[in-house]
Structures are given as C-alpha cells and as structure tokens.
Amino acid sequence: MKYVNANNLLPEKLIAEIQKYVQGETIYIPKPATTYRKWGSCSGGRKLIDDRNASIKKAFKSGYSIHQLAEEHFLSIETIKKIVYSHKKH
Image (cartoon, rainbow, N blue to C red; front, side, top):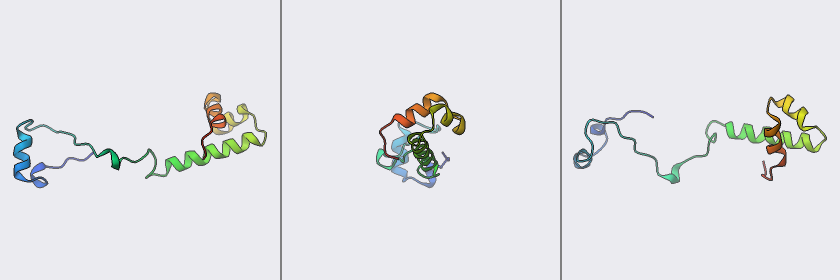
C-alpha cells in the first residue's frame, strides 16, 4: 500500500468534507469488492499450485501411495489426502 497526499489527488470540497471526520491521520480506502483478485492470479502462484495438485491426483490414480506423494512433494499426509480426495477440477 503506498501513501498518496490527498491534496494532490482529491478536489478541495471533498478534502474539506473528509476533514470533518478525520484530520492529519492516514486512512485506508478499500477497493470495491468487484475489483478483488484471487490469491496468486497476478503472480502465477495459483496456477503453479493447481498444476502441482493435478500432478499429485494423476500420480495417486496411477498407483502412488499417499505416503510416497507426501515425501516427494514435501507435504503432510493430510494435505495430500485433501488434494487427492477433493472433487475440484484442476
């Protein structure tokens, strides 16, 4: 989150209205909910995890055990179970 001086951005009338409620403090103005992005959508992190999970599911269906997959992917047995038993399409 970066700091922006309201004097450089907002009209004087709006600043005067805001000053009725707060002066000299930093306030956070959130984005509208419609502009939120899912975690990892910009960095590609979500795709990497989805690809990893698809690979784990495929290996499990091919006969790898949950213990083998946990060791190979450095994940807990419970995490591997959540991945292989989920019904999400990856």
